[in-house]
Amino acid sequence: MKTAIRMIVIIALAILVAGCGVRLAYNNMDWLIMRWVDRQVTLEPEQDLAFRQALEHRLEWHCASELPDYVEFLRALENDIRHDDISVERLMVHGEQLRALGERLLHGLQPAVIELLANLNDEQIDEILAGIDERNEELREQAFETSTEQLRQDRVDSMDRTLRRVFGRVTHRQTQRLHQWAAELEPTEELALSQRLAWRERLARALSYRHDPETFNTLMSALLEPANDWSDEYRARMEFNRQRTLEAMVDIHHMANDQQLRQVRSRLNSMANSFNRLSCA
Image (cartoon, rainbow, N blue to C red; front, side, top):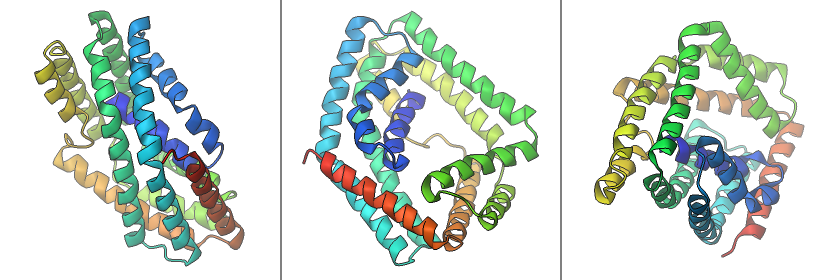
Protein backbone atom coordinates (compact mmCIF):
# COMPACT_ATOMS: atom_id res chain seq x y z
CA MET A 1 0.00 0.00 0.00
CA LYS A 2 2.00 2.98 -1.27
CA THR A 3 -0.25 5.50 0.47
CA ALA A 4 0.33 3.74 3.78
CA ILE A 5 4.06 3.23 3.50
CA ARG A 6 4.65 6.76 2.23
CA MET A 7 2.72 8.09 5.20
CA ILE A 8 4.89 5.99 7.51
CA VAL A 9 7.96 7.52 5.90
CA ILE A 10 6.43 11.00 6.19
CA ILE A 11 5.76 10.41 9.88
CA ALA A 12 9.35 9.33 10.39
CA LEU A 13 10.92 12.15 8.38
CA ALA A 14 8.60 14.68 10.01
CA ILE A 15 10.39 13.81 13.23
CA LEU A 16 13.65 14.71 11.46
CA VAL A 17 12.51 18.17 10.36
CA ALA A 18 10.15 19.09 13.18
CA GLY A 19 12.96 20.37 15.36
CA CYS A 20 11.00 20.03 18.58
CA GLY A 21 10.85 16.99 20.84
CA VAL A 22 13.03 14.87 18.55
CA ARG A 23 14.07 12.38 21.22
CA LEU A 24 10.55 11.97 22.58
CA ALA A 25 9.05 11.56 19.10
CA TYR A 26 11.69 9.11 17.89
CA ASN A 27 11.41 6.99 21.02
CA ASN A 28 7.67 6.76 20.39
CA MET A 29 7.83 6.23 16.62
CA ASP A 30 6.41 2.72 16.92
CA TRP A 31 3.38 4.12 18.74
CA LEU A 32 2.95 6.93 16.19
CA ILE A 33 3.09 4.48 13.28
CA MET A 34 0.71 2.00 14.91
CA ARG A 35 -1.72 4.81 15.68
CA TRP A 36 -1.73 5.80 12.01
CA VAL A 37 -2.15 2.18 10.85
CA ASP A 38 -5.08 1.74 13.24
CA ARG A 39 -6.83 4.63 11.49
CA GLN A 40 -6.56 2.85 8.13
CA VAL A 41 -7.61 -0.69 9.04
CA THR A 42 -9.00 -2.55 12.05
CA LEU A 43 -6.45 -5.24 12.89
CA GLU A 44 -7.15 -8.46 14.73
CA PRO A 45 -5.02 -9.00 17.88
CA GLU A 46 -2.61 -11.48 16.26
CA GLN A 47 -2.16 -9.19 13.23
CA ASP A 48 -1.48 -6.24 15.52
CA LEU A 49 1.12 -8.20 17.50
CA ALA A 50 2.88 -9.53 14.39
CA PHE A 51 3.15 -6.07 12.84
CA ARG A 52 4.37 -4.52 16.09
CA GLN A 53 7.12 -7.14 16.33
CA ALA A 54 8.16 -6.64 12.70
CA LEU A 55 8.10 -2.87 13.18
CA GLU A 56 10.22 -3.08 16.33
CA HIS A 57 12.82 -5.09 14.44
CA ARG A 58 12.96 -2.58 11.58
CA LEU A 59 13.20 0.40 13.95
CA GLU A 60 16.14 -1.28 15.71
CA TRP A 61 17.84 -1.49 12.30
CA HIS A 62 17.02 2.16 11.61
CA CYS A 63 18.42 3.32 14.94
CA ALA A 64 21.67 1.42 14.50
CA SER A 65 22.27 1.92 10.78
CA GLU A 66 20.54 5.12 9.69
CA LEU A 67 20.70 7.75 12.43
CA PRO A 68 24.42 8.50 11.94
CA ASP A 69 23.58 9.55 8.37
CA TYR A 70 20.82 11.83 9.68
CA VAL A 71 23.41 13.55 11.87
CA GLU A 72 25.78 13.94 8.90
CA PHE A 73 22.98 15.37 6.74
CA LEU A 74 21.96 17.94 9.36
CA ARG A 75 25.52 19.05 10.07
CA ALA A 76 26.25 19.48 6.34
CA LEU A 77 23.14 21.62 5.90
CA GLU A 78 24.02 23.74 8.95
CA ASN A 79 27.54 24.19 7.59
CA ASP A 80 26.22 25.50 4.28
CA ILE A 81 23.97 27.98 6.07
CA ARG A 82 26.82 29.10 8.32
CA HIS A 83 29.00 29.79 5.27
CA ASP A 84 26.13 31.29 3.25
CA ASP A 85 26.56 28.55 0.67
CA ILE A 86 22.87 28.19 -0.19
CA SER A 87 22.03 27.85 -3.87
CA VAL A 88 19.66 25.81 -6.01
CA GLU A 89 22.51 23.40 -6.72
CA ARG A 90 23.35 22.93 -3.03
CA LEU A 91 19.70 22.47 -2.10
CA MET A 92 19.40 19.84 -4.83
CA VAL A 93 22.34 17.98 -3.25
CA HIS A 94 20.71 18.12 0.18
CA GLY A 95 17.37 17.13 -1.36
CA GLU A 96 18.92 14.04 -2.93
CA GLN A 97 20.47 13.12 0.42
CA LEU A 98 17.11 13.47 2.15
CA ARG A 99 15.41 11.49 -0.63
CA ALA A 100 17.94 8.69 -0.17
CA LEU A 101 17.28 8.63 3.58
CA GLY A 102 13.56 8.39 2.90
CA GLU A 103 13.94 5.63 0.31
CA ARG A 104 16.12 3.56 2.62
CA LEU A 105 13.54 3.91 5.37
CA LEU A 106 10.77 3.02 2.92
CA HIS A 107 12.61 -0.07 1.69
CA GLY A 108 13.39 -1.06 5.25
CA LEU A 109 9.73 -0.94 6.28
CA GLN A 110 8.39 -2.42 3.05
CA PRO A 111 8.64 -6.13 4.00
CA ALA A 112 6.67 -5.56 7.21
CA VAL A 113 3.95 -3.67 5.35
CA ILE A 114 3.69 -6.30 2.59
CA GLU A 115 3.47 -9.08 5.19
CA LEU A 116 0.71 -7.20 7.02
CA LEU A 117 -1.30 -6.72 3.82
CA ALA A 118 -0.85 -10.36 2.82
CA ASN A 119 -2.59 -11.46 6.02
CA LEU A 120 -5.64 -9.17 5.81
CA ASN A 121 -9.08 -10.62 5.24
CA ASP A 122 -11.64 -9.44 2.66
CA GLU A 123 -13.42 -7.10 5.10
CA GLN A 124 -10.14 -5.42 6.04
CA ILE A 125 -9.21 -5.00 2.38
CA ASP A 126 -12.59 -3.36 1.74
CA GLU A 127 -11.92 -1.02 4.70
CA ILE A 128 -8.57 0.07 3.27
CA LEU A 129 -9.95 0.63 -0.23
CA ALA A 130 -12.91 2.58 1.16
CA GLY A 131 -10.50 4.86 3.01
CA ILE A 132 -8.51 5.45 -0.18
CA ASP A 133 -11.73 6.20 -2.06
CA GLU A 134 -12.69 8.76 0.58
CA ARG A 135 -9.33 10.52 0.36
CA ASN A 136 -9.48 10.47 -3.44
CA GLU A 137 -12.89 12.12 -3.30
CA GLU A 138 -11.42 14.87 -1.14
CA LEU A 139 -8.70 15.37 -3.74
CA ARG A 140 -11.32 15.43 -6.50
CA GLU A 141 -13.18 18.21 -4.70
CA GLN A 142 -9.92 20.13 -4.32
CA ALA A 143 -9.04 19.66 -7.99
CA PHE A 144 -12.39 20.62 -9.48
CA GLU A 145 -14.18 22.76 -6.91
CA THR A 146 -11.44 24.96 -5.46
CA SER A 147 -10.58 28.18 -7.25
CA THR A 148 -7.08 28.84 -8.55
CA GLU A 149 -6.79 31.77 -6.17
CA GLN A 150 -7.69 29.61 -3.19
CA LEU A 151 -5.26 26.86 -4.21
CA ARG A 152 -2.47 29.45 -4.41
CA GLN A 153 -3.37 30.87 -1.03
CA ASP A 154 -3.44 27.37 0.48
CA ARG A 155 0.08 26.77 -0.84
CA VAL A 156 1.28 30.08 0.61
CA ASP A 157 -0.30 29.30 3.98
CA SER A 158 1.21 25.81 4.08
CA MET A 159 4.70 27.02 3.20
CA ASP A 160 4.38 29.95 5.61
CA ARG A 161 3.68 27.51 8.45
CA THR A 162 6.73 25.48 7.47
CA LEU A 163 8.97 28.55 7.36
CA ARG A 164 7.73 29.72 10.76
CA ARG A 165 8.81 26.39 12.25
CA VAL A 166 12.25 26.93 10.75
CA PHE A 167 12.84 30.71 10.89
CA GLY A 168 10.32 31.92 13.41
CA ARG A 169 8.64 35.14 12.29
CA VAL A 170 8.50 35.52 8.48
CA THR A 171 9.19 38.98 7.06
CA HIS A 172 6.95 40.87 4.65
CA ARG A 173 9.48 40.45 1.81
CA GLN A 174 9.61 36.71 2.39
CA THR A 175 5.81 36.51 2.34
CA GLN A 176 5.74 38.42 -0.94
CA ARG A 177 8.20 35.93 -2.39
CA LEU A 178 5.91 33.10 -1.31
CA HIS A 179 3.01 34.65 -3.23
CA GLN A 180 5.21 34.99 -6.30
CA TRP A 181 6.26 31.32 -5.92
CA ALA A 182 2.67 30.11 -5.61
CA ALA A 183 1.67 32.01 -8.77
CA GLU A 184 4.52 30.40 -10.74
CA LEU A 185 3.60 26.78 -9.95
CA GLU A 186 1.99 24.54 -12.55
CA PRO A 187 -1.34 22.99 -11.47
CA THR A 188 -1.04 19.31 -10.58
CA GLU A 189 -4.28 18.51 -8.78
CA GLU A 190 -6.11 16.88 -11.70
CA LEU A 191 -3.06 14.88 -12.77
CA ALA A 192 -2.46 13.78 -9.18
CA LEU A 193 -6.07 12.62 -8.92
CA SER A 194 -5.80 10.65 -12.17
CA GLN A 195 -2.59 9.02 -10.99
CA ARG A 196 -4.07 8.11 -7.61
CA LEU A 197 -7.23 6.65 -9.14
CA ALA A 198 -5.15 4.45 -11.44
CA TRP A 199 -2.92 3.42 -8.56
CA ARG A 200 -5.95 2.48 -6.45
CA GLU A 201 -7.07 0.05 -9.16
CA ARG A 202 -3.60 -1.47 -9.37
CA LEU A 203 -3.57 -1.85 -5.60
CA ALA A 204 -6.94 -3.61 -5.61
CA ARG A 205 -5.65 -6.00 -8.26
CA ALA A 206 -2.44 -6.67 -6.34
CA LEU A 207 -4.36 -7.37 -3.13
CA SER A 208 -6.43 -9.98 -4.95
CA TYR A 209 -3.17 -11.97 -5.27
CA ARG A 210 -2.20 -11.67 -1.60
CA HIS A 211 -2.49 -15.47 -1.13
CA ASP A 212 0.04 -16.00 -3.94
CA PRO A 213 3.28 -14.80 -2.26
CA GLU A 214 5.51 -14.61 -5.33
CA THR A 215 3.02 -12.69 -7.49
CA PHE A 216 1.88 -10.51 -4.60
CA ASN A 217 5.41 -9.51 -3.60
CA THR A 218 6.25 -8.60 -7.19
CA LEU A 219 3.11 -6.49 -7.68
CA MET A 220 3.40 -4.75 -4.31
CA SER A 221 7.11 -3.98 -4.70
CA ALA A 222 6.30 -2.19 -7.97
CA LEU A 223 3.39 -0.32 -6.39
CA LEU A 224 5.46 0.83 -3.43
CA GLU A 225 8.29 2.26 -5.53
CA PRO A 226 8.05 6.07 -5.24
CA ALA A 227 6.90 7.90 -8.39
CA ASN A 228 7.51 4.97 -10.74
CA ASP A 229 3.94 5.17 -12.05
CA TRP A 230 3.78 8.92 -12.76
CA SER A 231 2.78 9.99 -16.25
CA ASP A 232 5.30 12.00 -18.28
CA GLU A 233 3.17 15.15 -17.96
CA TYR A 234 2.77 14.78 -14.21
CA ARG A 235 6.49 14.13 -13.77
CA ALA A 236 7.36 17.18 -15.88
CA ARG A 237 5.05 19.46 -13.89
CA MET A 238 6.36 18.14 -10.58
CA GLU A 239 9.94 18.74 -11.70
CA PHE A 240 9.04 22.26 -12.87
CA ASN A 241 7.41 22.99 -9.51
CA ARG A 242 10.36 21.53 -7.65
CA GLN A 243 12.73 23.88 -9.48
CA ARG A 244 10.54 26.92 -8.74
CA THR A 245 10.36 25.89 -5.08
CA LEU A 246 14.12 25.57 -4.76
CA GLU A 247 14.59 29.00 -6.35
CA ALA A 248 12.09 30.49 -3.91
CA MET A 249 13.79 28.85 -0.92
CA VAL A 250 17.16 30.26 -1.99
CA ASP A 251 15.67 33.76 -2.29
CA ILE A 252 13.93 33.47 1.08
CA HIS A 253 17.18 32.33 2.68
CA HIS A 254 19.03 35.33 1.27
CA MET A 255 16.27 37.58 2.65
CA ALA A 256 16.69 36.10 6.13
CA ASN A 257 17.87 38.37 8.92
CA ASP A 258 20.48 37.46 11.53
CA GLN A 259 17.91 36.33 14.07
CA GLN A 260 16.27 33.95 11.57
CA LEU A 261 19.63 32.48 10.56
CA ARG A 262 20.65 31.97 14.18
CA GLN A 263 17.37 30.21 14.85
CA VAL A 264 17.59 27.80 11.92
CA ARG A 265 21.24 26.96 12.68
CA SER A 266 20.41 26.40 16.34
CA ARG A 267 17.52 24.14 15.38
CA LEU A 268 19.64 22.08 12.99
CA ASN A 269 22.40 21.69 15.59
CA SER A 270 19.88 20.68 18.24
CA MET A 271 18.39 18.01 15.95
CA ALA A 272 21.84 16.69 15.02
CA ASN A 273 22.82 16.42 18.69
CA SER A 274 19.55 14.66 19.51
CA PHE A 275 19.96 12.08 16.73
CA ASN A 276 23.60 11.57 17.72
CA ARG A 277 22.54 10.71 21.28
CA LEU A 278 19.71 8.48 20.01
CA SER A 279 21.90 6.44 17.65
CA CYS A 280 22.25 2.78 18.60
CA ALA A 281 25.45 2.42 16.59
